[in-house]
Image (cartoon, rainbow, N blue to C red; front, side, top):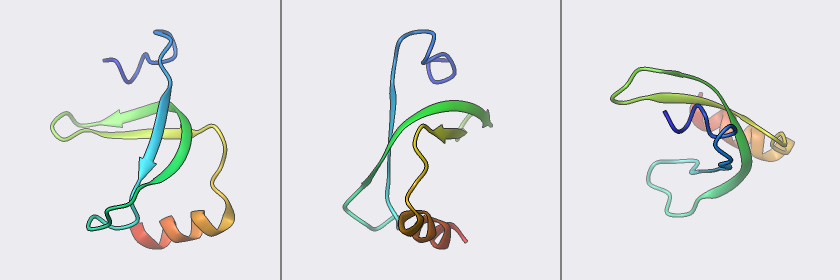
Length: 66
């Protein structure tokens, strides 16, 4: 699984996300590291951001998933 072994294989993961599914614009969240996953089709991956989100952006995304 290329996502799980991205560090070993010398690959960087850069995360982008939208606040809402109908948004056209993406926020660049930064580089991240694989932590775990669940399922296969679809698969949900848990990433850890190298740099935490700012308070405002964290609050916006927390409200979007609540």
